[in-house]
Length: 304
Image (cartoon, rainbow, N blue to C red; front, side, top):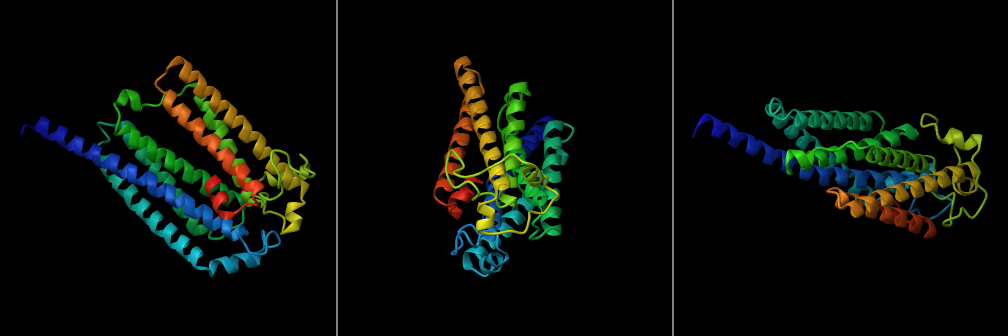
């Protein structure tokens, strides 16, 4: 075997290994996000027996942490997170050997390593923290890690010309809207505003875009210490919830328009845009269903 053929064979093996690691990494990171959402929402009181009095109550945390489902989810979260860490080490090691040939993959691997370290430090330094900024960091960091893993999976599977992302303004705006919507959703959860609008599509009660609601948008301020009926009857929290709904409608309309335009033009990204629009429609349906059915834990986690 000539040196050129041997080098090409090693590069092909490295590409296959990266692809497999990224594929498994997407699944495991998704599992971490789901388990983390379940733990966070269960601690907030969703699914508690004395609903809605127990919503946001500190005693709920103690009860939930002693239950078998809570223990199972915590173990699942730790195992999946540990496996993700191992896969990231593999991805980093393999990418270092490919750096001169595939600089794009090496940079992407660096992003994955940085996100993993950020989430690990955040989780270790802020266990059980109530600060909305922590919820934001965990949720947005986890979603970004899934996206980076999927990007690496595609980059090691498709031809380079197809794997490269075309940074068109319409897609950049759509991604920015998604990030904004994720941020608002995390703030709704962190401020216990999920039950403040118990009907759909309207709020069914008083809600306002006020200075009090503006304070809830500050991720560095702890939520006011209220629980149960006081949370549900809070106009500021209802306003935050409605802002999340308005943003959701904007995101769905934008991506449906992108998908329809791509389908009409028969562009290569039509299938991906249609898939994204479909997922967002399902997310909207899950959110509406969760609100109208009294925020059951399973639906709330699925919407998350």
